[in-house]
Image 1 (cartoon, rainbow, N blue to C red):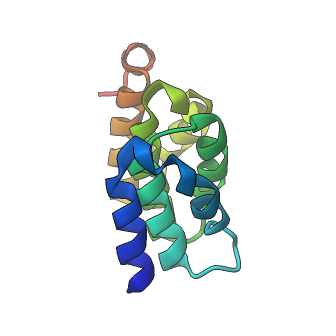
Image 2: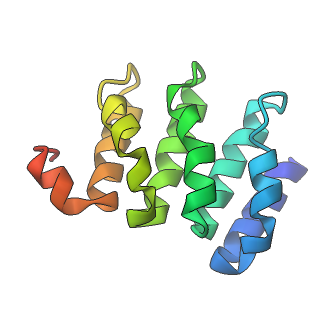
Length: 124
């Protein structure tokens, strides 16, 4: 419970929480519990700074066997807006995810990251 509260508190700082990014990215280590990883995604999205560092750290989780991690990764990426364009191809694959929520949020994420490209791709 403490990790959740701390991650959300850091996230509430928004861009002022940038100094916490290295710690949040280290929380994505595969040896950490998925709940810790999931809340690190949420906090990174809330901070939405340094996309060049954060987006590559989040993208591999779009293929996680853990649906909750895929969901949180899809949720975090559009918070970086255009800075998440490097995740575009992986998010397109999420449109075929087995989880309906992940598919739906992937479409929303793509529209938020690059509305013109999403329209051209026929993403509604």
